[in-house]
Each structure stands twice: as structure tokens, then as C-alpha cells.
Image: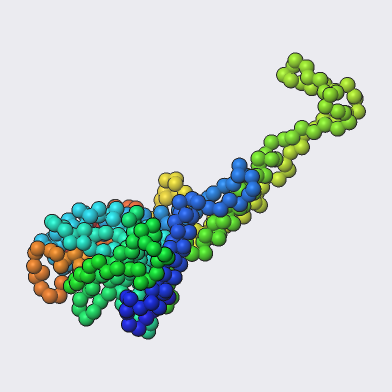
Length: 412
């Protein structure tokens, strides 16, 4: 793993570590992406009976949509009205895609466990570019996994391979771009010494901001959404495929005849009625006696276990399920998902704040004071009874439990 005491991008031992780390991460991310796209291994030899219940995609899509129902709001002060810097910051995000951009970052985090984004100078607003996590590795201190020493980005193009090293020296970030010719344009096999330095750039701000999706114990990279759930989804597909196979063979009655041969059967003209001369012959139907209730119950149990581990709540898409429920009742039903969502908000708020701080270095409006800080406000993903909400806020306001500004912010 790239845990080091001092970073030296040209050290051969570090090149080996980087190659191994990149290979492992790419393999893991590619597998998660395949399952998300529905590319699951077949469970039965007869492909007609294979069923893919893509719970991996369902869990990730529900989690990301729940986290980002709309674009988060960024504030730099406690005033009710936005100042010029806040307006510029929100416009910058909207020009870069707004909620769609943040959604893409969260989707990368859900599949890879870590989010990487870079800020590129541009006019009138800098660009925010989400990076493919499969192309980035992180170097961190061996005695402090939370302290980033540097980043390494790899990518390929028809004309060759490219690498970018990003590391910090004192208060300056150094960006070194390397190139490696295409295998058909070089002699022999590629090695770490084949990288040629193209350009070096120094930046006063961090060019890459990264953060983990879910926390991983004592590890720098965050935890993705799937993990061991891939194997559970395989078992769910096997049960579903077995049920389909049973139904294909036994869902309808099978007519069986004994005491005669097929040539003895005569078909009349009355609705295809069959006659058999031998009076001892017997004709009867064989049909499945079980309704597969135990198999269906096992399938439901496995699906519920999958959603329970992923902390995703799936309610019936029926309005009657929520009829008469209060805001508290709805939130209680979604409590596991709300707790997970709060955990994700803490991680993504930290990352988005750092991105905003870098963006504000390009803001043409000067900061009013040196204590400016970015605060992130998330939209509530659950529907609310507006009348119940207003009534509660008014009662708290009458009891002097909150002030007018707080009441207005709650009812926005």
C-alpha cells in the first residue's frame, strides 16, 4: 500500500508500489461497476432460466438520490441574504452542472469508495472536474493515514500512456506531467525508467480534493457501497433463477398416460378430445403440489437482508402506505437510511467545503474578513406535511424557543 514516510516519485520501489496499488484498485472498481451495470455471473447452465435481480444498482441509486435530492446550498456568513461571494460561488457550481455534478461525484464514491475532483482555472468560472477513481492513487504518511503526501494519476490514449504526480513541498503543490510512448513506438518492454518528464507546474492551492465515501477503519481510502454484498446478490440471483426454472418445468400440468402406446391414441373432432381403445388405459395430469411459498419466502428474506446491510429502505409505491402518517412516523420508517445519510453528509460536506475554498481563490470579489468559512446545507430527501411543519414552528416561535431567522430558515 502507498504508505510512506517521504515521497520520492522517481524511486523504483515506489513505482512498484504504485503499479500494484493501481492494479488492485482498478480490478475492484471494475468489478463493482460491472455489478452495478447488471453484468452478474450466470447461475444456471440453461440461460433461459437465469434471472438477475440487480439489487446492487438499486441500493446505490437509492443511496445517492437520497443524499442529493437537490443541489446543496453553500453559505459564507450568518446573514439571511447572499453576499457577492456567495452568489458567485453558487453560480460557479451551477455553471459546472450543479446537482448533476455532485450526483456524479457521489456515484463515483459509491462504486470506488473514494471521490477525487480537481479545479482547473477558467474564465469566467473555474472548472470542477470529477476524476475517474480507477485512475488515481493516494500516497499518505505511514504514521498518519489521514495526511496526504501526494497523488498519482494514470491514463492511456492511442498515442501513449500518461502519468501525473502531485505532491506538496512546504506551501506549494508541485504537478509533474510524464509521458510514456505507446508500446508499438518503443523498443522492448516498458519500465519505470521509461517515463519522461514533460512539464512541471507549481500551484499555490491543492489541485485535487479527495474524500472517502463511507469511513473505513484505519484506512485512507473510503468504503464503497457494495463490498461483500456482491456475493449476497449472487445467492439472491441463484434462488430467483431456481424458482424460474421450477416454474418453467412444472408451472402447468403435464398429461401422463399408462397402459397404451402413442399409436393407440385417436383424436376426435370434438375440441381435440382423445380416445383410447384399451379400457384399462389411464390418462391423468401431473402437476406441482407446492406453491413455492418457502422458496419465495427465502428470496424475500435474502432481499431484505441485502437492503438491511446496505441500510436502504424500500417502501411500497402506494400512497395508502403513508396515509395518516405524521412527519415523525415517516422519518421513523426511514431511520436506518437517515442515519446512513447523515454519515454521508459529514463526509461530503468536508469534501465540498474544501472544493469551495479552492474555488473562492478565483473569486473576483474580495473576502470581507479572514474568518470566512463555508457551511454546507443539504435538502431534506423526505416529503413533509407542510401544515404540520408550520404549526410546529409557530408553536416554538410563540414559546420563544427559536427566533424569527431560525423560523424562516426552517420554512424555506
